[in-house]
Length: 227
Image (cartoon, rainbow, N blue to C red):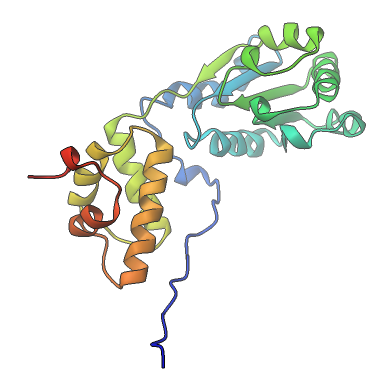
């Protein structure tokens, strides 16, 4: 009879987007300040850009909660919904560079400007680089000022790794990020992937997350490993 295999459960909690959970560092301090002082924007619209996993969605949710704005993912924006959306105090349109209905976004842009409502756009790229085809929309997006979340520094990556493990109810020693981070691509996405990989391996093997586990399960090239 085959021996039963215990399958690990992924207990990672869903993101809460609470203000206390957002990690402020040099790479995102400018974006945080700009969104906190939205009343000082030079125009009704602003854009937030940055790489995947950099905290754009978290900041967008905090901004929406702070000013009682409505948040919508760009791909879900439809022209029929624009008049109702434009009644809100403000609108956040997320991930505009991943595809959006040009006509709907142009209509929303024009209505919000006319009604002096606030618009925040987010994407990996600034709006001027979004793959839109309508000339009128292109020209409007090109005028939107942009604040960018920069590349993460070491201090932020350490904080992020510790927080991501904490979200999974996993405690790690300071030696784990000290070993892992120099061997990863310097990105939020790489840290998230490493945390997920290590957590799954630890659950499957019934072991704590340690440096020896990281040596075994992370896909590191030979020249990255300790002598």
